[in-house]
Image (tube, rainbow, N blue to C red; front, side, top):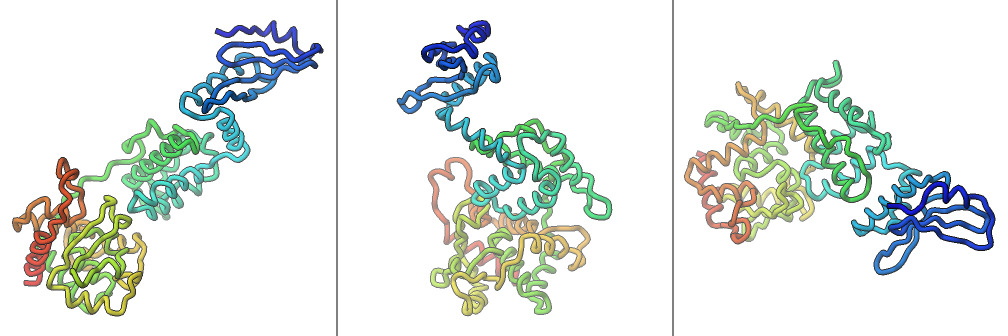
Length: 392
């Protein structure tokens, strides 16, 4: 309980005296009264073993009730290990130049997503298109849930003549924005809980679980596409490697010459290109060694294996339309090729943990902790047999 009352302070306010006095309110909070009768709120505390003091404002502009509330906030900062004087300065700077919605989302993209998300370019593109033009310049602390919902609704419902309805994309954008705001909050960069109560179904819908596996005849059509010189070399090579290795499109799209060891005949995908942030080592099938050697002859270590770097959006768009180009009745995507490879290898008797390693998945359970074998011989045998089956 406090020891001061307003009547004590009013008696002293603007009354001259011989010396400065300090009146305690408890828990380190005190009212410092100058010889001219000015009353300054101060909080005394210890941080790092050193006694410190922070000003909380003048009375009566800052009332006794407000001074106690500020004192309580400062003690919370202390309990979290922060210096109240530093925290107040940071808040003052934030008020002078508030963190905007765009600042917060870009902070997450740079400090987290760049190193931990495979589709960081896609995330930024979606923010640029759906968030920044509408609320990007608003102070984050002043945005409310309805501001964000309006953005998500434009994605979910679409814009006539400009954008098709995309309820799954709306949920995807919301999830990323929600994670970004939480990241900013726990890092004490900016605070907003506007998205805390939202779920995917509040703004859109969840992506349906995909189970598309290409039939033998469809896979044969794709394999023929790979060998047709009339088609673009970039996509012929990408699709060939997708079918032969079960790799992700990103791993192939970003692949540089230096990842391909033509002495040990291994392809090593670095952690930075892997969705699971683990190094992936795949043996190179015997059937493409001659082609690969010829492909690599004119490339330096830093050159892209496919000859250029296309954007993920361009590759994704191409993959979404390939089924039509091949005359297939049911749609499929490039990711479905990866599922097809996994399914076919399992059907051919390849052990599940070998398939998982070829796909670049982390092994589960105890195996993820104690088993760090690359199973190179088993993977090489599986890929060689798979190539022969495709080629026949």
